[in-house]
Length: 508
View (cartoon, rainbow, N blue to C red):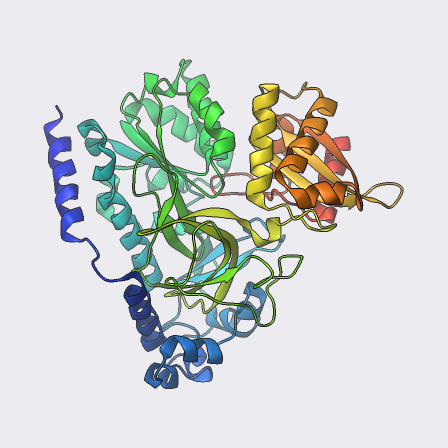
């Protein structure tokens, strides 16, 4: 038995017991809203929307909703965050030293989201809560004396003309790790600061045998590429040949299931898969119990949540939020209902629409899964396909045809006759698969699972088309569009113009 690992494990377990939250979830959320309003009451945003008066009102949540509108990125940036790049005390006290660049999975222009010191601390606090949950899994003692490989975006941040540093949020986090993180964090800041993705992977592969990796964190597609590179570089059978203590993969950014089979091919022992909800706007949730990918919502860490039902109560047929939607707090949500997530945070985001939809799988404690993106809602001709329905169909077809499909994109476009079809581009190592069979299986799976899709196929949705490409072509396209590397996510539902751009590239 690893004595040090045993001691660390017991210490984390004791910390877990000492830090059990006993407050009611709604009490925690009310306290977070009071904290946020009080901290920001003297900012330009706080004065404009009367935070002092809201705090003095009889019902703070009701007054907050009545006075502060729901805002998207364009609205926040044009009036507030754009000014916050130049001046202090706009939406949060002080002037942020960092802005996260996030194109996310929608739009071509990078968004700039403020990263305050309070926000960085909140990310660390949620990470600490995540670590405190690890004794729930009964991991071997050796894990607790091994190292963690975090596959982030580049930690080499660029300086903006307004004197702040900017980069993707994972790179900002790495650049702000305290010195003692070097005891367990790999690949270390030097390698993490290499800008070029391929060069960074090469450096990691070269150093890999020197490390004792017990856990990996990152987006599945890029972690999988890295593991394959290390195996090829050192002529291994599986990654466990050099990292025998590798036990955990903390996934994030995209749904994991379409990658599970490929991960099993590069490992000798099964990994425990934990999910995380870590976005540019916050570290919102993490898996806290074994046997589930559901994630515990961080209720006491500088975030106030609101939830809009992703149905006729809250959104229109295109998934856009209604002018007067139904809005719920944490004590009003129900299980197995999709909600648009609205957040107010210690980075100066106020009633902000992230663009994610979530679904509660448990209410005691509150545990969620990410069910999709509001823009990943394919409903141009009434098909009403959410991301999780698309994922489920892809998994069904993969199982039926005995192939692996990790990535895909789909779009509603018009054919030569001016009629709508669904154009799919499917990424698989089995690129010689019978695309007609795949098309038919995919169409039938969606018809069986979704009555709205079945109706649409009998009316306005005239056909579906499938293009199967290999991973080399897919990653080449991402590189061409500067979408290659650590934390990049690509859209599963593409706008028509982006799909045409992809098809033109493939045809060339």
